[in-house]
Amino acid sequence: MPKKLLFVYNPLAGKAQITGYLSKIIDIFTKAGYLVTARPTLSRGDGAEVIKEYGRRHDLVVCSGGDGTLCEAVTGLMAFEPSKRPPLGYIPAGSTNDFASTIGISKDMAEAANMIVHGIPLLCDIGAFDDKYFTYVAAFGAFTSVSYTAPQQVKNLLGHTAYILEGIKQVGSIRPYRLKVSFGERTIEDDFLFGMVSNTLQVGGMKLPSEMAFSINDGLFEVLLVRAPKSIADVQGMIADALLQDTGSKSFLNFKASKVRFECAEAVPWTLDGEFGGEPKSVVIENVNKAIGIIV
Image (cartoon, rainbow, N blue to C red; front, side, top):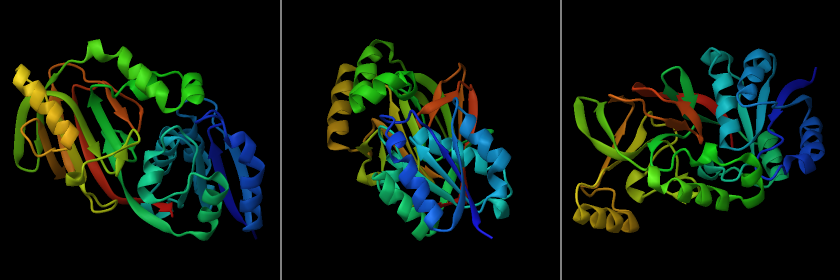
């Protein structure tokens, strides 16, 4: 009896390149002995719902799209008991594909499909954001809304340039949040312009500082917070530190943790893997160690 494969793909991701590879990808899966069910996503969040409903009936789940599509696939799988989660294959098709670059998945679609049928699952940590999940980054503050406010059609046409243009439009709206951040036995309260809880080598196509060296499944997140400058001298120092990627300076707060709580008197917009994650005043972010087997 053939093995069953559920293939969920975003037909609009990146420059909609999946449409030219769909037949070849399904052919690769079929020749590897899989009975393939292919399903395009119809709206945001649809991928997670499809996997929640049908994923447990399949031996392998594969998704194709950007980091947001991967996040949806992970969210769908996290609805199952750990012992009943099928492994996840990923064919990157987005504008940036941060997570694929981190774990070494090819951006060539046919090659990525071949990797899935011949590879092995790598157990990866997943982030729990209250009742939501993310694969590699949760962030708030300066420019974090760029990824989901830039229209998909513009991203398809311009690629990374779309993010830059959207970021320029938001320069005038940058402001700090007064946050209480609790991790381990420490609590820090300060004004922050930006913050991210990550498990990746890069975010937005940019490599993270070497001080944030990570393991994909050590049970810990790398947390980076940028303090709001209080003087012109602070601004100059922050720019210099950023150019040198010196995250150990007073401009930054940099630490590792398995669990972090953020509290604020006002609603704080967050992004999860580049998609809007809500506006909580208080949120607990926790590392779910080795939760999903992603094929590499």
